Image 1: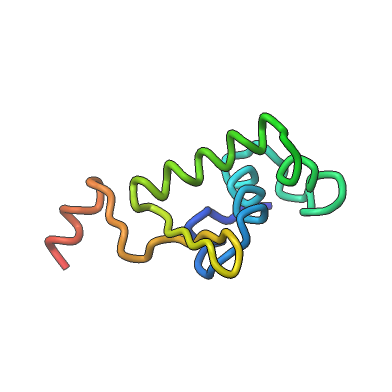
Image 2: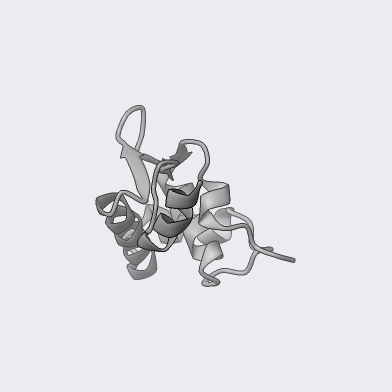
Length: 95
């Protein structure tokens, strides 16, 4: 089973804990068949080193404008649809 990319899974505003879970799956930290359920929630809802790391990664992606973040109604993330990496510039110029 192929794991969806973070770009694919964060199209819409997504609660922070679910976004961190999707990030963990997209980088292969968690297998794609592991659900966001009672056996994973503690990583995102408690002071867990892996959860903290994943939230730091999400926030770093916000700083780089790869992701967007909002705090209301809750902390949520989504993919910044206008983000272009330097590897995309040549293709963008040709379009």
